[in-house]
Image 1 (cartoon, chains in turn green, brown):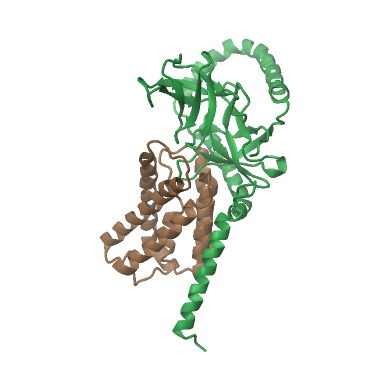
Image 2 (tube, chains in turn orange, brown):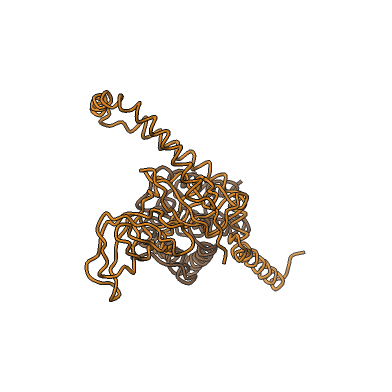
Amino acid sequence: MPLNPFRSKILWILFLLVGVAIAGFLVFGGVRSPEKFSYGERAVLKVLGPVSKTASFLGLGLRKFWEHYIFLVHVKEKNEELQRKLMALEAELVRTKEIELENKRLRKLLKLAEQFPEAHPVAARVIGRPMGSWQGVIIIDRGLNDNILPEMPVLAYTDEGLGAVVGQVVAVERHYAKVLLLTDPSFAVDALVQRSRERGLLRGQGRELCLLDYVPAEADVRENDLVITSGMDALFPKGLLLGTVIHIYPGRSKGLFRMVEVRPAVNFSKLEEVLVLLRVRLR
Amino acid sequence: MREAIFLGVLGGIFFVYQILSFLWQTFLPFDPFFPVLLGGLFWRLRPPVFWGAVVCCGLLLDLFSSKLAGPSVLSYLISLVIFLQFEKKLALQGFFPALVSLIATVTICETLRLLVFPALFEVALPEPAFYFVGKITLATLLWSFLCWSFCQISFVRHVFEISKASGSR
């Protein structure tokens, strides 16, 4: 028997209300828990985390294939030049290789065992990049199962092999975690100019550069100065590399301060692995 | 079958987008899902499947690009309802009304997603915010035109049985 229009309308409204309730539960349910992921996000991450992981592996593989086998313009000239350099470097290489390997082992041991003896660093792979947004977040393949919790600091090695700040964990799931990058406008860290010990607050800008704010107008800051963590925020250990000063705005901002532009030490577009320091600081 | 293709397309877009993001960093990042969801309105999908996909895509986008859960889901729902109103009230007669509706809906969606809801949830905005939002909106519009053009191809129209009542094609 067909439903009369009134009953059909009631059913539609009920259907709509149930739909809205389910959507609301998925979007907002569970965000107040320590994990900070909503129930919906957790479910989606469980299903699509492995898809993203596969995509990241495939993407990196394709990039390497492109760079090594396809994009070979000027390769002949380069090859000849490299042949000449190679001969001179070969002798040096054997000696340096040994020193480098020893250095790498010692540096890793030293950094992981002595620099953060209480932090128990965990290595993680980047499996998700930001999608269509100015916000700087990445997804890593370690989570609650590896004792990772929100607010934990995340580091990576720079091209020079130094440990530098990537950001901090903002949400975790059993096998995955979301990391807020240094370049996100919500990110701020207490910082020091290494040479002159001038203090400031390093903030993300939503692009590849950061801003060192609240630096006194008379402060001694120069281009190419290194910026490090001050350790005053009780979150990041003191002395971790943040970036390099690339520009100092002339004049004063907010009356008393000057603004300094900083390029992060980590190249976020090439970020593949990170190190999470398990130093918990829960509110 | 149509539902499976639709969900497969969304999953495929996510997969390819992630591959591309690991290949290189684009100057013009775009919202990969909204234009496809907008097109999906014409594919006569069952409402629970379509609106479920909308919520899931919003959640996925928030998961991978936002500090908070919610902005994308809310902006997707609002924008798609606005587009339905456009279609209902204007009947989208001809090329220009459809084009204007498309531009308006995408702009509203991306502004809500990237600017209004983050600001309401007290997420710090980038400086200059309008430059970033404008860039992503522009790139999403380009992606929308591509999707729209794709939907004009006769075999796609046949597969998805695009409604003849609407003049947006």
